[in-house]
Length: 508
Image 1 (cartoon, one colour):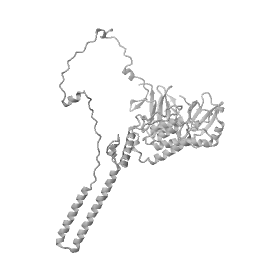
Image 2 (tube, rainbow, N blue to C red):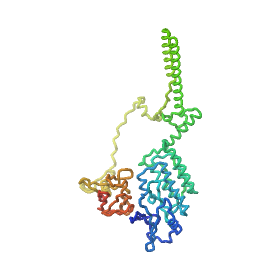
Image 3 (cartoon, one colour):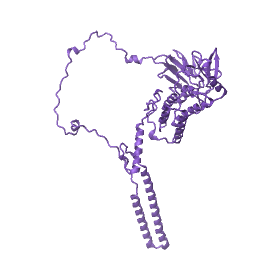
Image 4 (cartoon, helix red, strand yellow):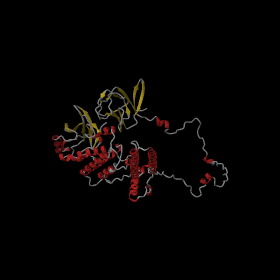
């Protein structure tokens, strides 16, 4: 199973290191490559580019990219979720590499901006891109189209959406006069915005849809490059409610009207204005001042008694203290803050139209109606009767039944579990085996299994398996697999991951 891109064949090799090899089916000739770019790559160790080596065999040139110790970005993103800040940071890292390539006289449109050709070292911040020093790449789209596809694909990995950054990003990518420096500044701006709001992102604009549900985004990422239409992204219902609430608060502050004066603004406990909280604080300060004054008055009363120490004055001071306490309690009750009145949404009743008698029948105001006379169903004419034209024991063909559909071939992996054989159906075109966690379709809890260990893929030529750069490797019929190379699977092949043996079967 060979992979190809832009007229180049992709293969992987383990020989004193792990390499991705690009070649051509008809033979890549030296004159198809740019000598100036080759010399520039050989003379400089360019940051964030995969190290490139050339090898010529019988006149054909092969490009060797060292990927030792690196992992594909596609598999890294499958394990990790993105925040809006990391989303913009990831795109900024790629755009920064494209902008810096001009310093080394490299062309930005010679990069392969696909997840399978971008590798991570220590993390998402350590990216390494694939540069092809070829004069022309067959079938390659414009640079803005490649970035559009990456941006629209990665937005589905974001855990929480807020703000208008994605819409501004796509507007910039769809501009006719697209340029990288402008895009870089836009990404820097939204990196600062999302970094400051990362602690408390706005809940009103958060993504209401789980990851396994379809998102209400327009398919701007898949629009043809020739269209160059600016995307129109509609706010969802939660964002619209938030905008209406903000408009209602602004109108109430400026004019003094309540939020109910704004059409469509919901009246709920969440829309209580901040002025109520300020009023509560003011009343609290007044109540505290009242209590302190009462205590001061009581102190003066008993100071007066302490100066004379007369028995008749004792009862007067006690009565005065009681009066001050009663007056204080009464004033505290009068200054108690009022609770805001929260009006629930009024129910909507289904009012029957004029002439509809069901409503009056239910309340008992309709006239008793005559019961309808029973009309027997008419028998169909003789020519409509079904006639049996075969024997009762004859076989009738019913086409593809449900039972036949259930027995359709579904490939699976079979393994032994304490003497009993169990099956793992391969019901996805990309089936990943690994440890417990996000991104895996079948979990193998065993020491030595990588988080994403191996992947079984379905292609036009059939099923294949590839190791995902695991530390302990994957065996196929006793032979170690080259990481990322797709090896074809056939009936009865044995896949071994650490100590577990899985037998590939073509159907249930």
